[in-house]
Length: 176
Image 1: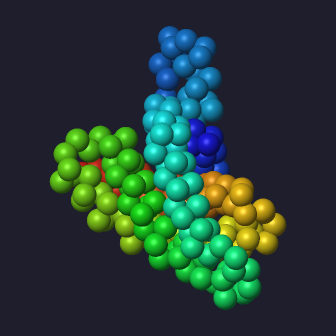
Image 2: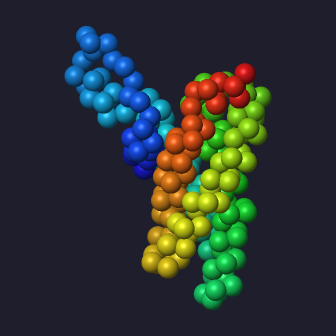
């Protein structure tokens, strides 16, 4: 999902395609026109190896904590837990990964990116995530609710690309 989210978010946010030399092969031209780049493949690996397992563990833990509680107070508690506990963990991990993808090679550089991006990304998450969570709690059975993070992550990436938070300028200034 990370691959698809990355490519679609780049399309919808209007991120320009990279330029390919005219002598480049047809596959290279196809990838450029489709806005598929190395970052998309790296984000796919991140999603498969880190983000998805982490999200599943965090959501399952929250579901165990709220097991047997179905009323409005429980739903509000799950929403608050997701926004105040789960989201900050996932955002920190996402920003650290994004820093590495963008070229950070030291712990200090990664930490600078996380510190600089944490509040803006958390703000975007607090706007987009409640809708995804309420949708999941209303329409999805509990065993597939972790997929709501896919909707929320896509919405976050779209908004972040639109606001240029993941642009080279933003990262280069944080990377020093």
